[in-house]
Image 1 (cartoon, one colour):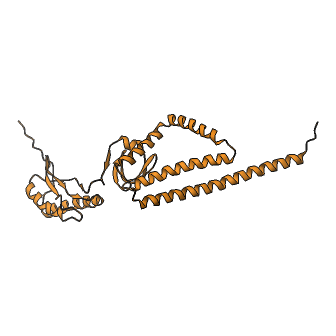
Image 2 (cartoon, one colour):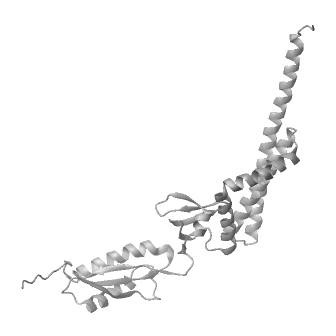
Length: 271
């Protein structure tokens, strides 16, 4: 029976630990350098696309796709550094990709929807939209999801497939939009006189467009009296300012004219 030599075991253990430690340190260094190179490459691509006046949405999508592909290549390189057969890993990755694709069909659907949105361009970064149940400004269109900042400054991430499968309203696509308001009049108020009084006051509001001119028409009749449709037009960036200022103008104009407060009136007859 051979004698158990502790010294040899310790030396072999130290040698193995040293080799593994050096491998780990080398992998960490390779990862740090690789990530730095990927960030540098995507930054250069971004600048090159910007110089070519490529749309911001398309440029970010291309940069994100390249970053993902380079990261996968980096992971494969790290496995090769540890002695893992990369060809075998590539086959496993392909097989795993099929399995993951079946299990995570939603992710693939989000990716496909993102590709179609980049091609069809229903909106771009910076547009104010309503899509996927969220209304706000688009800040990023990535591989699988779109980031939208809502008017109350909440960052919301929505899957691309949900957006692409639903109705998309792009409020920034047209040169201007209409502000829809109503003004309730009392029964004793002359609706035509109220309309003539309100129109020039609306046109004087800051950022209300002269063309098309503001619309003021009788919308309907209620138990409280006639209801006016008040509709000034403005650029999208000025929507809420015009919305609130128009409401103030309606109140100030009708208040200065001495119009009575509308109240519902019913007539009860006994037979």
